Length: 257
Ligand code: NI
Image 1 (cartoon, protein in one colour):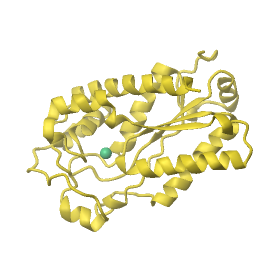
Image 2 (cartoon, rainbow, N blue to C red):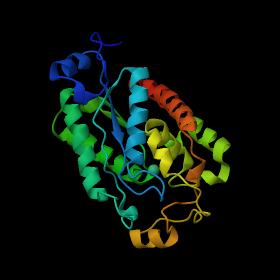
Image 3 (cartoon, rainbow, N blue to C red):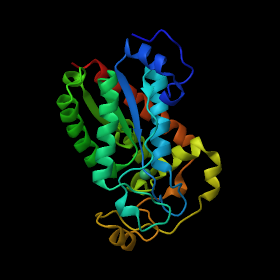
Image 4 (cartoon, rainbow, N blue to C red):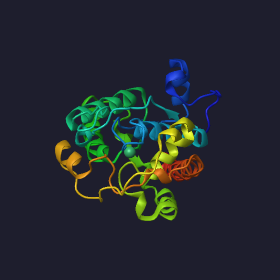
């Protein structure tokens, strides 16, 4: 059921507490955008992962009428710390942060927490945080605890997104500072296109260890990618595909027992 009030925005930040209370009478779902603040090669914005996660979250919210929590812009980016501008949370910090976000929401009666993630480095920690949140919610005896469910949705791994990226960019999609994520930022902030330029062949995709090793293996920050292929038009299409795929996934998640 859709809520009675018609907020102009699905951003929790712009709501009042009575609006949240009324929303909870009809909907127990909430979207949490999760990003990272880290280098994206010599031509990509440091905020890429947070900008893209928030944009996908807003687009999903408009389709699904589910409220969106403030975006979490800092993620687990320890391996990117060799590049200026990167701001990282250690896994244990991110774990505690996400656990507390989920438990806060559960305390008010939210039962379905859908985390839209823009950064691969967050995945293991986010799942661990969900485990701690379930336990904490149960220990606190929260009424929502038995029905509390968290789900991690990585927009860039949605088959409709990956398939399109592969069609557009083939092997030059790479694994970090990819043309698909950069394209999405160009759609959101067209001025970023002025930073793009042709780049030499990237270092090939390989393992990820510590930040010193990362900078040695991937000297300009890219992993196998060619972000110069990115266009705002492709970003618009990728956003559309991500929002459709995750919107359908969210509906299933909200309705699952
Ligand atoms: Ni990224």
